[in-house]
Image (tube, rainbow, N blue to C red):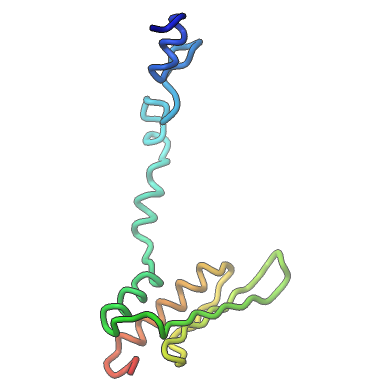
Length: 123
């Protein structure tokens, strides 16, 4: 049994002073009303070409061991330009450039996936 009524309120997930709920959200739909759940929907629309490439290689060749992704950057530290090259079995299949390493990787993997899906490619 709680010694004070404020302690009992706090154990129920409510603030000691105001009695408002806290911890896992405001409880009033604030996040939904202010668009903070929209990023989930947008994130799900972004194609993940690196994952798709891995899945494709695993399905078609039963391995991803021949996959190699090399990256390099040029330019000043505040404005790096990334170049990423995707190799499979020592053959270049995709190249991407971008302001971030992740973006360049996605572009390179997209080109590699398109090239490897062509009949006769990948050995």
